Image: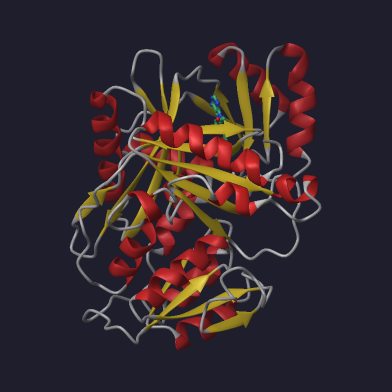
Length: 386
Ligand code: AMP
């Protein structure tokens, strides 16, 4: 279904998924006096703490997604591992943005890669893997190292295995094929940087990109986003063009985050898409005149979007559960916040686990080097290691 006219403040945005992305979206919605209703199995989920209402249910419950659609004027989702059928069922009643067809493409790495190739977007060489034999054949074409990945249900490096040589083939295959989902193997890209760009696209087809972020991962989890990215301007320009092209070709209404590798030759290969706000876009909350969350609220409501501007160099560092574990649940926020330009964002998660995203720090400074130094120092202070 499509919106007939813009939704005025007071209208309700339905969000499937109640994690931190839903929470920050709900906060941005509240700022403009939009209401939110969240569907999540946990009524005390991060988004549930700030939403107007929570429907407590599994993501695949068609009845619950229809109830969400009945209560909301427009529906979105905050992660890709939601059941596409339940999103389609919500779509019968209310506009869902981005559409369930964008979700279906992006929640499966094989579908996603095929769509990118069809759109003429460069990706790392890959093969579908149905058997150990397929994996062996792929090795003879792709060479080592390769990365074996589950086509679905993988995030933050879960469902991935690096294959350095022949001896790893069977081990990696056994490990991932046990999950009973489709597998894909990719050439390992020895990138010089990883960047991501978020493109916003409205129902009228207007597009706007945020400044590309340079991303540093640790243990496959995003650790730091640096903006402006420390790469040639010609490459950031290319990153923006590619993200816009993808938003248009997939007919995205909403946000699409495009994760990319920058090769040693300054070429770009697209790694992954996410049709939602993205961790690497959290810097926009303090570094830009409009955040990724506000931009999405505007699109969902059928309002005009902005051409977002980065007003200062900004660095984001993630705060993972280990900081809580190492400080007996008591990070030193006081010393972290003593530093200039630091903004603390916490997600209200009660249980801290290693690798779990609990919050992030944004640092705005005169230069990117200064922002990076302060961000790392602030996290070390919170961690009681500095
Ligand atoms: P993904 O879940 O595909 O986003 O992968 C998580 C991280 O693993 C990426 O951000 C990269 O740091 C690394 N990675 C994934 N695929 C590849 C690849 N084909 N070549 C090199 N590094 C990769």
